[in-house]
Image (cartoon, rainbow, N blue to C red; front, side):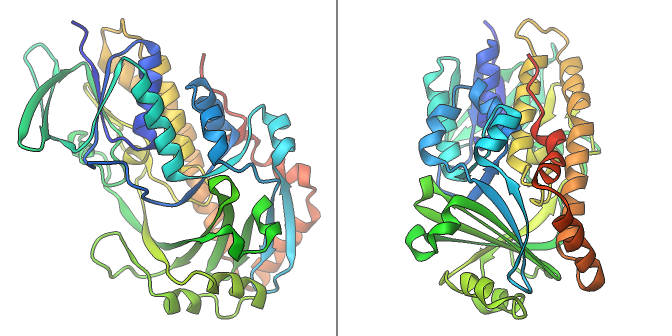
Length: 394
């Protein structure tokens, strides 16, 4: 009997990996601690590199009714409220890269991946379950001890993939991997009904830059809702890494911003906040027949909008390098790690550098804005080609 690949985590990375490995011919068991797929998180951006993989997985067309393809990214000055630059999206980016740029609610993408996985006869998703122990048999099989309620099962697996997020438990089975660190930045998130904002905001993504803060907003849920994310440097004093936010504290970070932008920030009656924690991609991603994927391996700042995309890319590369006939699975997982590390590290560094640039003040901010104004829309778009132009291996 062919042993399954066991995946810890039914998030975007885990379900993408399950679909890719199932399509490659593996039997797959996905183990997820949550008893149901709740609507955790808010919006995310899916650039063409991610959409190509989703198309290969048979998910993209199913996702489109829940997504929005914004026409542009409008970059503005938070202090003055004036436009700095625009980057073309919509049809232009689809023509440039052969795939769309979408904004979606995280839960809609997860549910679409989940429904697709349930249709594949090779994939089982076990909710309300947890891998509590991992061992090796004398013949090198990975033995996963899975707790589901009061039932403890021993699942022999050909490989174990840790796709269980930034606070991964499977990471502890990869010696030498670095643990998450708080980056000193907090993301405040809120969602509004679309009718609460001006109609022109529902066709584009907004990026507002200011001293030690920036704001991103875009429509989600087929344009029925509006997602706002405000990002600021802060000390984190809460228990845990997410919490209900104090609205006054958030608004205090933007006290010197332009009235129109502040008015937008004042619309939500409540906000949630997340501590932004990162995982250095230079740490080892695999050990023996265990490997990490997505945020478990390389959680990054959201300032390149590539966190979900990198997990989706990971899934495609892993499945490509892992044929069901593989006998040296350790070598397969090392090859996957080697194939992904350089690109992911570069994206991780780009996201961190973007954050520094977004939060400039004084003469440095003036210089940034001047350079952006002088660049054509095509040149601004071309700066992302190395990210958006990535294609999955065939």
